[in-house]
Amino acid sequence: MAGLSDLELRRELQALGFQPGPITDTTRDVYRNKLCRLRGEARLRDEQRLREEARPRGELRLREEARLREEAPQRARPTAAPPRAEPWLSPPASAHPKPGAYGDLGASAASWFCQAKQKAALLELLHELYNFLAIQAGNFECGNPEKLKSKCIPVMDAQEYLANVTSSSSAKFEAALTWILSSNKDVGIWLKGEDPSELVTTVDKVVCLESARPRMGVGCRLSRALLTAVTNVLIFFWCLAFLWGLLILLKYRWRKLEEEEQAMYEMVKKIIDVVQDHYVDWEQDMERYPYVGILHVRDTLIPPQSRRRMKRVWDRAVEFLASNESRIQTESHRVAGEDMLVWRWTKPSSFSDSER
Image (cartoon, rainbow, N blue to C red; front, top):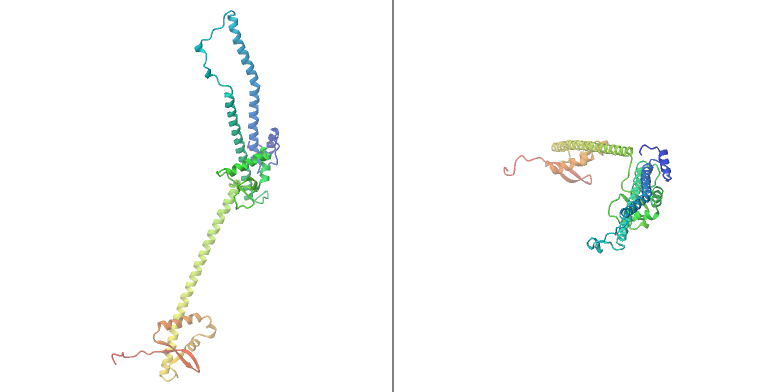
């Protein structure tokens, strides 16, 4: 079956009375299944025909044998009276079936056989529908060679396909959809309405059918698996690069903070030297006031072109002196008609109060 070419497959189907449509990669497996089913049906028809032909000959032979058995005793004993049947040899009346009893049993068997046949036909229709939707969904996810708008196949397209392949009527198709709606099992087929988010409850609201398990070829599965693996590797390396860059940025930030901390301590040391030297000059009557303005010290230590860049270092140094240096006091004085903050050097006393 698998070795048949497309032309041989078409000829086999036509020889069995079925006119196939275009045979493509999508429909080849479907038509192979159809050919297998048609061959089985043809074989069953041949066996049924042979049985029907053999039945008249068998009945004729049985009647002839019965006639010969009836004539044989008469030829052997022409004057003998027929034996009298003893009462105890006669079958009881209850042993004979009532009229119509076998007919009721036959009707029940026929009804059961019809129901089983209808169920088999329904399952066959659902199987064909499942294969068709699975193949279409797989093709949609593997490049969409048939230019489908979505994986959800319209109801009319699915019904037309089943009518071409299985020669089923619209009533059977609706019965199959009704069975899917009423079944609590997952048959791998989703029935969707105009709003995909809403649950479909009746057949007339079904707009399209979608397979829950797309069937993809080996090449497509391999390419998708390879693409997934490459994507995961790229995501891993991107995350690794991001973490590495973040680590470099943090190390740079820590280094800048350390450099700023060191620059702040250097600035504190310079400020202490300037304020102490100013106080010494005041003691030697070289300065008019014992204090010096904070902004004057800043302008002395930091050149104009670096003041914007060194502003953070200067502010941290001023804050550090105010909270950690007891030898320098921050005061407010009026200098040249303006109030300004100044630093004054506090000379430690040589003797404590107790010694005095």
